[in-house]
Amino acid sequence: MPNTRPRVLLIFPRFNPHSFWSLKAACEVWGARCPAPPLGLITLAALLPQSWDLKLVNLNAEELDDAELGAADLVLTGGMLPQQPDSLRIIELCRSRGIPVAVGGPDVTSSPHVYAGADFRVLGEAEGVIGEFVAAWDSGVRQGVFEAPKFQADVTRSPIPRFDLLDFDHYLFVGVQFSRGCPFTCEFCDIIELYGRVPRTKTNEQMLAELDRLYELGFRGHVDFVDDNLIGNKKAVKGFLPHLIAWQRQKKYPFLFSTEASLNLADDPDLLAMMREANFFASFVGIESPDEETLIQMRKKQNTRRSIEDSVARINRAGIFVTAGFIVGFDAEKGRVAEALRTCIETTNIPMAIVGLLTALPNTQLTRRLAKEGRLHAAFEKPPEGAGDQCTGGLNFVPLRPRRDILADYRSVLADIYEPAAFFGRVRRLARVLDRAPFLPQITWKGLRRDLRALGRLLYRFTVAEPRLARHFWPAIVDCARTNPRALQVLLFNIVPYLHLGPFARHVIAEIDRQIAEIDAGLVVEPELYRAPAVPAGPAPMLAVA
Image (cartoon, rainbow, N blue to C red; front, side, top):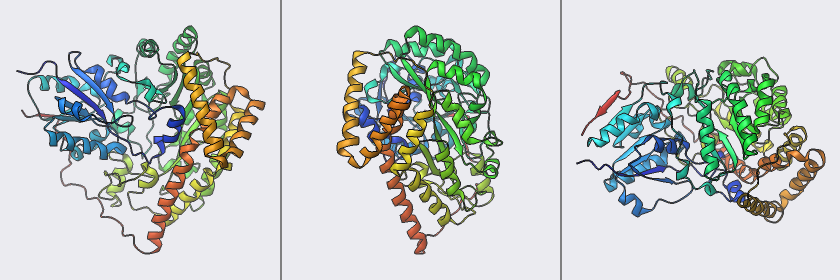
């Protein structure tokens, strides 16, 4: 007889700690263990039967208790490509203990064959398939593949995530999601392959209910809209923002928001004004390259026919600072790419510039083109051991420019932009132009104690532990206090990550130097190239074997 109350362990795999996004030192300053909780898993938890006994373990914030694992009837795990090594480790651990394990998420959806060792593979968006999985489990099925119809999940039926499973003290911020998908066609991006080009949005009532739940649970502070592109459906988000503004006013601004959006956000002053009024303070933007020919080749035409500097400046004037992604290694690049990237990053005053090597991700237009051209490495789906995101694990194909030249340009950009004087110079210039709205954040005793402890740790790190940074840190603080004191909070949001980004940039530079030295010594042989199977591989729509 099936167990009607199975003990289910939801395990979120570790990210590589040596990656851009681990932000370990910044987490330590703010008293957190890792940047953000697993929104996908707590949304999945809300989709599962209420009778199931659920326990969440985020391995980026805590260790897995052996007794808890041994007591589990079922383990649910999975995540993104950078989590693949730990996901496979968890699967092997469960199989060795005889515990059924199901894997889901974007990486198994893109590369299901990599996860053949799992008892269950749940592919696609959970809302469209989880009912079939639960029914199969309840009927006694203990093996199978379940695939959701692509791009058909009705997000208006997605429940409030199980925020109650989280310990908020573990995280820098908490994520929510308004929409899925992106209307653009960037060649290197897998978002449109996973979630489609027609962004689907939740209702206004849904989003406010999620924020209400966070508020009821006592959370205050930074909330990130994790959307692939918040303005992908501009009409929907402009319809939502007035309700968000009213909610913030009524609650006395308990949250400040960040998000991800395309650069054409800068073209809509009304939208920017509403985001400012709702207390958005940051947005990640994919800039990738300042070269128009390169942008056209990568099919990122939304960034062409515009001044990137002016676009970023308009976003800054709305009180929102920009964190941006840049990529080195495109076919259309010229020899002066390093100089152009440095100039773009400096003139836009972007402190946190995420510069990586082009990576052919599974299930993208880029990967299909490179495979057709016979330039894709056979192991393109497997992250190199110890790779720090695409920063050290990119160029998993045969580039048109000499590999050494690309690596040298990449190294040059990193060395220049994360040199302390350059980084803090961008921070100071940003703080002068950032027009933050005069909202007073809601203060609680718990939040005040946490902020005061964080301030003490911050001052210690930048004056005692890292004295060489004091001559950059204090002038930036004084300059902001004198010229634009409303930007002080955001100034600190940009400064603290340098405790991670500075050492991480040096780590990446050392790895790139090693790779260049191997090329110079003639030790590098291009890996085996990918050969497409005679019959296209892919999972059956549904296969369930008892």
